[in-house]
Structure formats: structure tokens, C-alpha cells
Image 1 (cartoon, rainbow, N blue to C red):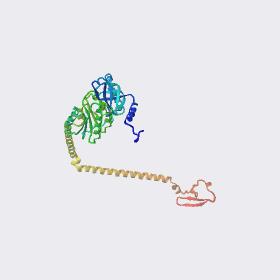
Image 2 (tube, rainbow, N blue to C red):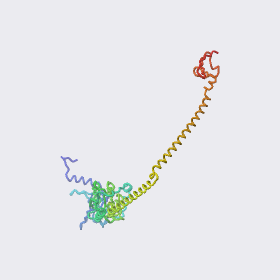
Image 3 (cartoon, rainbow, N blue to C red):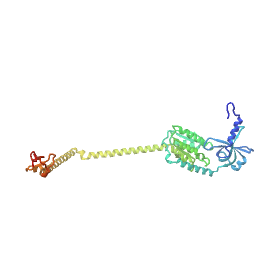
Image 4 (cartoon, one colour):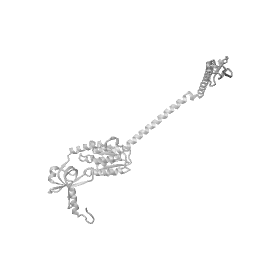
Length: 399
């Protein structure tokens, strides 16, 4: 181990770095050619490979023969697959990759990769219509991400200002093509999404070939759009062009001009609609006033309002008749109840023991209240109670 007292020389550190890097061995890597250097007469070609989704790059050296056999028409911006081994140059303290095979990715393979990525993002729910947000009807401020002085920028700004002259834009110019496009666009998205004054973001680019529009199908860009809290409108290319970011964005516009029409309302059209609405409201109010006036005139022509005393007299007559009917009904009910009460009282008296006692009979009871029905139920010397029609007697059994 090294220490302040026994530090390693630079050559030792360089040797150890080289040893660690050499352990990686040969690898296949995918990247985009950011820079291509072919010196006349030189046997070695220098490439700078950039990650399409991140701001990272590596230097690759390849022999001219290998390049001519694998990718003779290679140009900057092309996607390649390289078989290379990392090497550490101790003299310069730099890292590079030495390639022994290089393959240029064709359009068919790129489209197949995009289709596979599309299925992956769809399975993760990035295309779900339920999570898409509707942009505001009239945004306070609009963020625009596009190339500098491009036709897309001119179309969006001109058409939006023609529709709504007071529209406010914050424009961020980025690279929309090439190896630096994705990091540039993702960075602009993050800046606008963090701006509290931005209500909607437009991602605009003019038409181009499939290869030109590849940055807008990049996985990192799609996930950055999905992560935005601000609604995003995608306006990439023309109507037939459908990069993957169109599926992730909240709103897909066929062209940059279409995005300008979607982001702000048409002032002339809105004024026309307001005038129509005002006219409909005026007509509705007038119709309501006329109808209520007719109802009021109809109420005034009714006898109840023309001769209100006649209504009172009729109601008074109805009230007197009702009171008379109630009285007769009450008298009839009381008479019938009194008759029923007399009959019930007569039946009660006929069935009452008092009527029997009044004819000279008596009820004999023991001290506990038991009524005697037979002589043998009493014992000699027992005291009995005799209940008469009027009063009671106490008797003692002697025999």
C-alpha cells in the first residue's frame, strides 16, 4: 500500500491502472459516431463514440482496413457496433479502445430496436392514455424546445402569435440531430419543467429522415418526457412521422404549426364565440321576460284577482258547510256511542254477581279468599266470611 512516507511513482500508478483496465478484455459496445478522423496515408482511423442517451464519449482507434471492410461509408452521426478492447496509454495517461471489428447499424436494425423499445415502454405504462394531462386552455407562459433559427421555431412562434398576440414564450435552442441531441433536449426539458411560470412545453422539430429523427425515439428522452410534471406537446416532423416521444407526450401534434394551434386559442374565433354567446343570452333573457309578462297578464285576468271578494265568499261558504258537516258527524258519533254504552252497561249488570246477591244470595269465603262450593270444604271451628248484597258478616262453623 502507498503512504505519505512511501508514495508510488507515477509509472507504478500508470502500470496498475493499465493492469486493471486490461482485466476487462474484449467487449461489444454500441454508440454513435460523434467525430471521425481519417488522415490521408495514415493506417489508423480515430473515432469518438458517444452514448446516444448520455453526455459520455470514448475514443476508439481502428485500422483503415477494418473500417473499410466493416463500415466503408461510415459518417459522423451514424450508429455502430464495435468489438474493442480498452487500452491505457501510459505516456499520455489516456484511455482508448482498440477495435478489431466495426459494424454500421442499418436502418432495418434500428427500426427493429425501436419496435422492441416501444413494446418495453408500453408495458411499463408510459403510453397509458389515462396518465396524459390536458394542457391549459390559455397558458400563462409556454416553453419551446427547438433548434436555433429553425423553420419549426418560426412556425410555432408565428402561428401562436397570430392566433393570440399576447402569448408569452420561453425558447430554449438545442441540438435536434446528432450525438449531442438527446442530452441537449433532456437538459432543456429539465430546465423548463423546473420553471414555475411554464404551463406547457412544446418539443418541436421539422421534418427529416428516419435517421434524423432517431434522437426523439431515444429511451432517455422518452423517460424524461414521462417524468415531467408540466404537460408536454410533441411536434416532431410531419404527419407520417411518429417517433416514440409522440406516444409518451401528453399531446401529439402532427406538425409544429399544428402545435401552435393546439397550445393557444384563436382570438378571432373566441371573440366570435363570445359575440354568439352574448346574442344567445340576450335572446334568452328577452324570451324569458316576454313569457313572464304573459304569465303575469294571465294571472291578472283570472277571477281570483279580478274579483277577490268572490273567492273569499265562496271559501267562507265552503267553510260553513264543512263546520256543519263536522258537527253533525260528531253528534251522530256521540249518540251512537252513548247507545252502545247503555247496552254494554245493561249486559254487564245482568252478568254481575251483585245482581244475584240482591236477590238474597250470599258468597261464602274462607279467610284466604277461597270461595266455598261444598260444605265439606269447611272445617269445624273455622271462621268464614259471608258477603251479602249490602255488607259482610263473619260466621263460625259449629257443625
